[in-house]
Length: 338
Image 1 (spheres, rainbow, N blue to C red):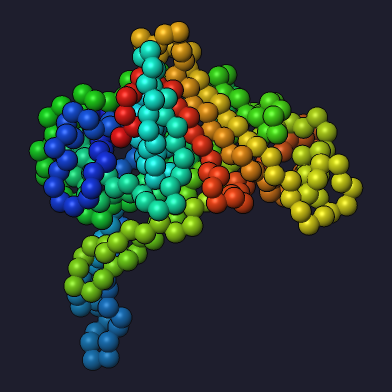
Image 2 (spheres, rainbow, N blue to C red; image 1 turned 45 degrees about the horizontal axis):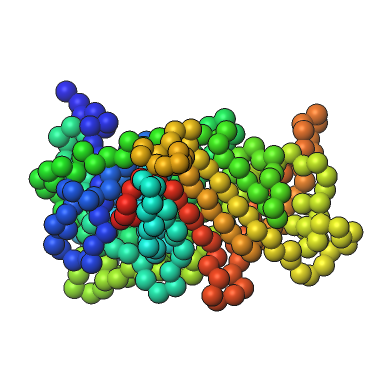
């Protein structure tokens, strides 16, 4: 008899760090329905080089230092999405609740990144793990016009413990709010709604994940380096203005210049369903704004009778210290983000 994956879950709870399980994990944890993903070990079998005086076979091997990392892939449901977005941005903001609708305004932090306790049940009885001192390293959002809004969250944890007893009540906290489809997603650039066929968004904290130290099997620290925010969309162009802007710097230019044009990119997604108890009726929604975005140069590649399409990458910039590089506004029925 095998083990079915669907019986498992991954839940998390923001906490101060350390080996103590958050007391409210079973009542305030965040549990996501996953398509796939786990926090797998990053570890090597240390095999010594060949030695003179030995023989042709490997004499021994030891296990090296270890950390745990992985990508959690899911349909993005908006009730618990502030935990993911705020987790990767490092700031959960101050939610504002009125008439049954909570608005989460999430902006990146320059100084802190939250730490999570993670609990994972694998299959229907195969194994149960806890992970301590975990961080969200990356977030990838994407959708096609005829598809679902998808999310992939990359996490890294310092330590894992196997054979735990699953926390009572945690599995029941799974997010069952509505999913979002591409027909309810729009992309605006410079105030113009684009006829985009797909979009993507990536946030990468570039956590240093190899800080191993003498005398320990585990990571000494997880430190975030430079944050990178990029977006992308596929479009069938009406003219060559976007190509000129990306390659020449200005949409009306006829020769290359050295400056880039920075314009606002706004991605909006909403559900078909209303938030329960919201007055007036309000949809679950996510609005991501990048106020200063430049197009990366790209090549036009005509081929046969194919319709010309552009796969455009947008680089988020932050020229002003006091202006967030991006802002995410989520309307949901979750009173807290994490």
